[in-house]
Amino acid sequence: MTYILLAAMAAGAIAGWLYPGIAAFAEPVARSFLRLIQSVIAPVLVTTLVASFARGGKLNDLGRTGLKALVWFEGWTSFALLLGWGMMLWFRPGEGIGLAGTAPAAAATDFGRVVENMFPASVFEAMARGDVLQVVLFSIALGVSCATIGEKAEPFVRVCEAISATAFQYTRYVMNLAAIGVSAAIAATVAKSGVDVLLALGRFVALAWATQALFLLLGVVLPLALFRVPLGAFWHHAREPFLIAFGTTSSAAALPSAMGRLQAFGVPKALLGLTLPLGLSFNLCGSTLHLVMATFFVAQAAGVPLTPAQQLMILLTLKLTSKGVAGIPRANFVILTSLFPAYGLPLEGLAALLGVDAAIDPARTGVNVLANCAGPVALARWEGWAPLR
Image (cartoon, rainbow, N blue to C red; front, side, top):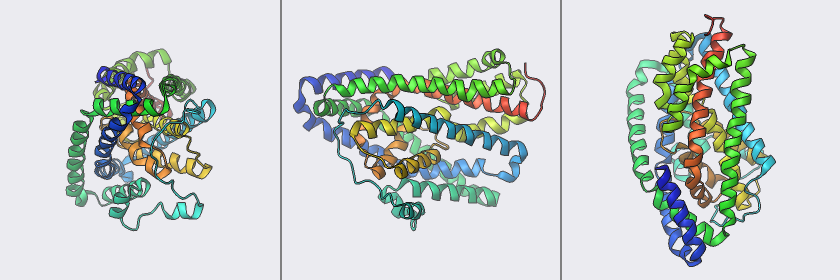
């Protein structure tokens, strides 16, 4: 799929450069592909978040160690979010492109109205309107409520999991059309905005890899060193799950290997059984970092000014929507498609990013898994368990 998307992107770029008039035909194709993605956003977000928080939100069962794990996960995903935001504001790789596209009106930025609009009067109205933050907050509250009442909610949670699995399969089918959508989007973008957009996409890919590497240094290596974890031994045991994630671009695929290797490292099985599956929902640092970078890249490329209030709301929304989506193919694309209309960002920019997403996905997924491996190791030290080896 990686090579197919890159070939589609190249074909679209050449067509848009040589035949600018192709934009009139390519744009409807690209928009149709984006509409297919938009059609599944509400089912994916609601059912995935409800199931994720219902399964992982039983705070009474987590105990002290589980609460420490949640604090750790939320702290480092917040750091990843802020790191990506800071890198985009510092380097601004999309600035000056003049990305063409049709953007809806931006959301209101008055603080009182923003706070009020976080809470839905009707979740169905919020879904129809595409108000992703309202949908997310409702879903989280519903998931936590399911966790609170326990077994009585089990049939409802199983229905959500079934709908979620069906929505994932629908998304996979839609993504089979990604080559057509990417080729059309790139052709239309290059025809309208010129080849500078390709250079900007190259800069974005380079910055994305550099930022993921910087997070590994500050968010994985440094904390482990502070907890006096032998870094060479950690890499020896984490290397296998990392390579599985890097090669398959699936965080979930690396879970069995991570369980076995970290247990061999000396992390207690009980701790791993609690923290590693929880991390698949709450500790996707690489994905969280990429979400904010992609959002601000498109804002810069399209010349859409974002007020400080809007930027903070974007960070909050991405913090919440990144939970529980490890199993969704191109999950970042689905999340951002739901976010962009609320802030006046053109979806055409996101379609262009999909063409280079395959070049970023291995690094993003590898960071997810290494950060998820580092959490239980650091917690084992924190709890004073058996020495790691």
